[in-house]
Amino acid sequence: MDITFKNVSYIYQANSPFAHKAIDDLSFHIPSGSFVAVIGHTGSGKSTLIQHLNGLVKPTAGEVTIGDFHLTPEQKPKNMKELRSRVGVVFQYPEHQLFEETVEKDIAFGPENFGVSKSEIKHRIQQITPAVGLTEELLERSPFELSGGQMRRVAIAGVLAVRPDVLVLDEPTAGLDPRGQKEMMKMFYQLHQEQGLTTILVTHSMEDAVKYADHVIILNKGTKYMEGKPEAVFTQKKALNKVQLDVPEMVQFLNQFQTKLGKEIPFDRQSIKQVAQSIQQIIKGAESS
Amino acid sequence: MRKIIEFRNVSFRYEDEQPWVLKNLSFEIYENEWIAIIGHNGSGKSTIAKLLNGLLFPQEGEILIDGKQVNQDTIWDIRKDVGMVFQNPDNQFVGTTVQDDVAFGMENRGFPREDMIKRMEETLSAVGMQDYLLTEPHRLSGGQKQRVAIASVLAISPQVLILDEATAMLDPKGRTEIMQTVTDVQSENELSLITITHDLTEVVQADRVIVMNEGEIWREALPREIFSLKDQLREIGLDVPFITVLADELNQLGVPITQEPLNHEELLEELWTLHSKT
Image (cartoon, rainbow over all chains, first blue to last red):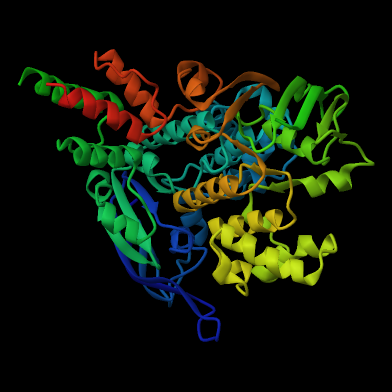
């Protein structure tokens, strides 16, 4: 589903002395099927943006369009429930939201609420369990006996079982160890491709954004600060530093390489191996000259 | 050198019948030493921290802090010696302002007022938060909160400071701030430091690294030796830093990198030498 923000502002506790503008005249367009990374430091408006995507809040000004659903200050869509079944949100530390007696019941809770039949839920659970990296024998266990990483996978399975078109991920790898982080991101990317999802990833990790996103939006003080392809956005060190962000480590290294050796290797989301090859060429060139 | 911490054949599990979280663990930490403990989730590294200040007690073996055994009778003394900063910045702020937060630990220990004022100034300057005395916690970033937490611990002059994944919930800027603070504090104080992390880039400056796996010490070595283990680190769920992977790829392509680089500068220096050898 296409997602459009048109001059959206959101004010917490409007018309009170505590009024606080979390989003300020924000506009962007996300075409259906894209993988977008939203980046910004704490307090930049990321969480408020997410809450608009499934109608937890409606804009104070402007218009949010998600597929055929419209959110404006005057109206929420009448079929809010449908919007929420189409947009799945994985909030931060989603494992804190588990509550059922068994893993299977917890995963089934979402689709049951949206009126999916028992047999269809069973079928979906069979598909989703391996897709999120859980084994079938875990289904009968209590979710609270599982490890943190497994609990998170159960919570994510619950969101996916509703079969959303849009998947919103709020720092989905926070607190996991490196292997867990990698596996989790790989899983989301695979789901994104196989199910043709529109994915919105809120993250601190420039590395993940470079690796998976085809479009990046940088937020600052509730408004859009930069937008574009990762390789274009992530090479602008000065601009990023200004909003307390930094370029990915590879870009940092390539900049230092240019300063030290006077040779430029442009960043185009290449692999570390490709960087090594470019360096080898430069050093070989120096030897033969 | 004086031994500050000693684990003697320590085993721990949360309940009978459950698997052991730590298995027959022995190691020593000396005065003024910086030790990094790394390992994947569930490798037992946070349990070590909780045993160190008596939040948990081992079923087997013993733990000595500056010669004193950790047990029910000694924990209150030991907690004066062992200060801890945890992962979540929002869970460890007790005061309503920065000043109150730093004063809290000192008040509990009955420091005289003049001492408190002096220590407050010293420790908040050490973490770069001296201009925030009256600031309320919700106006601080995660990194700033963690720095105040470090100051609060330093204020009671512990012999050991433990940072248990203290950067895990911070953004990259917050992380850099904390690591800088920790480096400054370590160089200016008589203090043993234990940093617990799963991020290999945070172990570079440590004197010694203990790698945990499945409740046991997997390796104990210098940072540079640990970095050179590469694929073996991946096998136990840890990540190899960018610079290590790049040096490895270069070597495979026949660009001779002689020393395992710990940071960008070291690798760039070698490349510069190779490049200018014409």
